[in-house]
Image: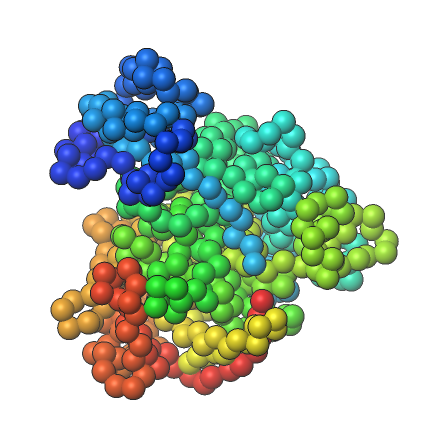
Length: 540
């Protein structure tokens, strides 16, 4: 993007914001009378000017975030209003907390057969932005670079990052038949630590790590970035600093894979888990991943959505997410015995007598995202010329679209049963199929932005596509091909250009009207939105 275009974009954004506040609403909810750490976005080339003024007001510069033309300031009471009124300022938001999205992957996703044919991610770099990495014999030299953005050590005190890295690049050497081998066992991992020993970090640390990954792209051939973390959405993705950062990485040629979140059981807003996608998974360019339950088998036919997997559409912008789903329930991967998760959850330990470094079971979209990151690495090993949009489009186009009507899952701890329906806001374009993706040669033209969901006055929901996107009406990239066309009727799901929830869903005993904030007046769904048979199991 040229300097002129950047200036024009910032000018238009600033003009848009003049009609409303230039600070996020959640800043008004913070305790009064206390210093607050904020991310301040400024106009192009104006960081130095604002820093000088802010220092004079008593604000403390914590760090600069040049990737998104921002800075982190610690601001005393009364200064926020001055910042908001300053003409150099575009937008102010808290330095919010991000957390890991934690709550039989290789074969279930089709990665096992891919490795038999030599696709292992060799030569491809993957940046894992997480809680760091602690040396594990199953990963060894695959981690080629480590850096911390929150403390003085790149070691993984929590355990989450090491587990994620094992899903991507673990060798599975000490398990029967390499059962726990990662998706891309010969990929090179760049570990960037942003989460502490409790699995908590900040927007600023995450943005700094994203910036570092972009800087290291050529050095380590970083083509994929995994973010198994997130936080709630507070503003449009155009203003959200996390979303701006992942967009920069995407523009730099890096496939950004983000966990959808684990809010699928959340009915606090009366939406039955709809509208719970986390940031930065709400950005339409990134690949957002929900979790499937592989049910401890290598067969895909009995797999079902994990009931905790967050559903779309996204808050505020109403983007249709997740983009696809992948195995993420009860995943066994690498862990060190000195990690906090190992100590706090002894029942999740998986001990292998021949290996001093151990394995651990975790569930969540945190575990599903690295499966897709590994899949992206395999595609890029096979065809390095693919762009991030082409990788995303191919993974979505080739995803399996055969699902049951609905599934019931019972929480093993509470005994509560949850129903899941297989609509576009639950499973996206379908279930990751790595082997199908590797055997597909369609090359998308244009961007692979996820569409926006729009609802008309009659309650009909349709998908709206931005100009220049690859999803068209053609045979290869038509919406029916990418999202599926199975059993479309007035009371079912029509994927793409038609009605997502048909008019038959807006009345009758099968309808549930939400009271949440996704549509303003609530979310609509019913028993008519799915097809097939109902299955029952449990997930965690």
